[in-house]
Image (cartoon, rainbow, N blue to C red):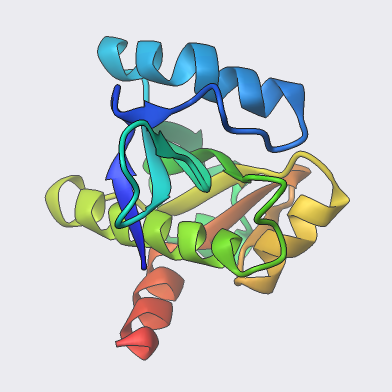
Length: 170
């Protein structure tokens, strides 16, 4: 059984390997510093029964963001004030030894749930992500993210879409 936890000292950051040095370095060197400074929060996927140091199967990072509404798809932008708040999915990665087993979907659903927790307390129009490459863009689009007209690798998932998707999962 898997479990999502806030990154802590009990997690084996050094043992994680996504296959991309920038993502590995973020988890190993930057994620906890960002948490301490209030920049972002990183959540990890672990086996529920894992002993310490808990191997990390995957992770995602969230932070608050501000966006100009004109950068949004026109159908969204016309209903909003000039500047709006959202949540950025800064990074999402699955250990290269566990890729292809649905863990990316587990992480994305967990990120969507975290977004709704934030939304219930502070609002926000949706979840934003910068796709790192074509494969990442296709992954996010599969889950309903839409490219921003101003930048095709920046994607957006409106709050209503998140609410509908999670209501269906029940």
